[in-house]
Image (cartoon, rainbow, N blue to C red; front, side, top):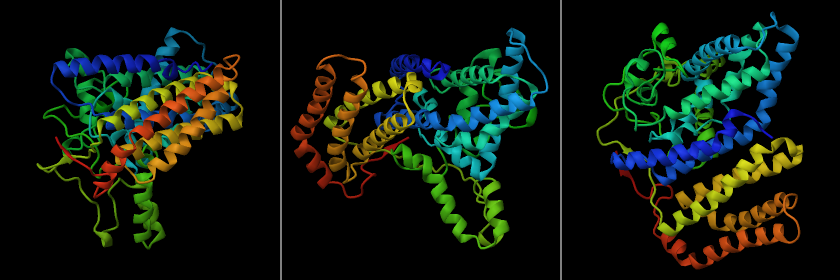
Length: 420
């Protein structure tokens, strides 16, 4: 069983999001949208699934350095744990800060900032590539002598702490604001307003920002998101969009030395002969959030399929060690495919109906294959047939609704906009 604190806490995430929804409704704060929240969670799903394979890179190299180069044999007790927790957050500060200040690294972090809302679901909007650019920041802890198990535990707790600060339901928190990262401090970090850009990088503690000059108090309410909105509900494209932009801009740069500078300078940098650094502009008053509106039956269908997906994902993450390499790959592809299919529904892409018919069949086979080892007799096949039948019946009964809706779409992906 996967004992990662992040995986174990999955049920608590959804309980807290439910509580937040009630509080925000009482406060008349409409900061949840179904399409945005599902995309946030989808990014987290894809991140956790791909992380199954990337752990070989991060934990594997850390373990190797710990076994070969550790300078000290550090005992495991409460004091060394607290020291590691503090040092980890120090390393996190620099990994996080440079993920904002280096264009290539920003490609691995921009996913987390691309939502234009701010709620607990945004905490789950994690990148699938960030580990590639940031794992090396924690390697000094291995050389010092902190063992890999402690590192995994501390990193999980650090990430869990950051979950609850992604909310507008909590205002200022008194004296805690002086040294801890709080919802107020982190709202600043997610703001795209020029005064808020690249501020408040701390994970658990805010003191590193105060020490190193990156602290900003929350003043006016931030406008959330990134300066170049991704305008998509597709979690795979959300992960790739910045790299695609980098590829196109690199083609514009003729000099190899400038190409290297482009990769490692701040996002927005270009050589002077191409216009130079593009400064962040004030958010226009007529700014509108990216949004799409679909008929209620489509939303109900997504919700039903999403419950199935979350069940499959949770089972996979909790029992990942019992899957062989090919099974891990197959289930991972099925999960990621399903998240992309949801984006096709929200954006009403023309391809979604055809592939959805095929995906339901594959998903049903996957459910049968997994449940075959858990249930006896005819129950695995009955469960698979039930899920597939309900899905197909829904598609048949709502065929006219889908066809009529698609025929009225003039520009896929931009069906309606919602003013901030």
